[in-house]
Image (cartoon, rainbow, N blue to C red; front, side, top):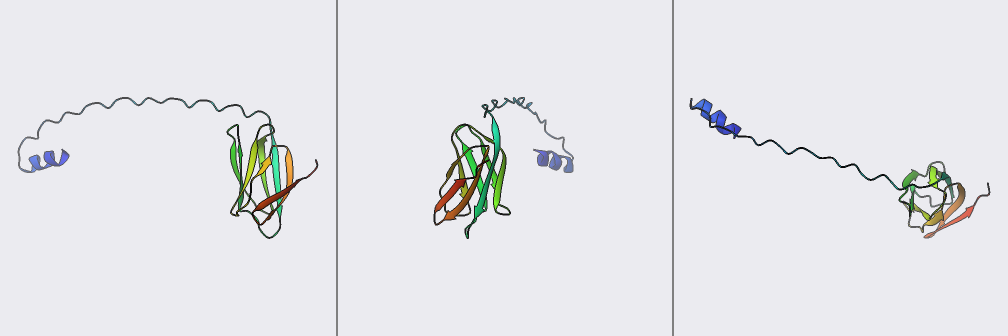
Length: 122
């Protein structure tokens, strides 16, 4: 339409009338508040051996999900739920998941396609 008005001006003809409908207002709806994850604690996973994952992803049934890089042989998560079902998935290697929770330290090795972990006592 703007091109038509420009061409009309170039030929010294009056520009046609243009009507613009006002846009409908944008309505924002707040996202629901996340469910309470309950108490949380630090989770540390130490890795030794020839196969080291690039990072670890922790997923919990409560909706918690976080990734941490494996650097210096370990991955650290500052606040993982201490209750409920959580699993740590090594990424960058083909390996099984490990059941974890916050407040734990695990000493792990990836052997073949199995993630073998032993809890480190507090």
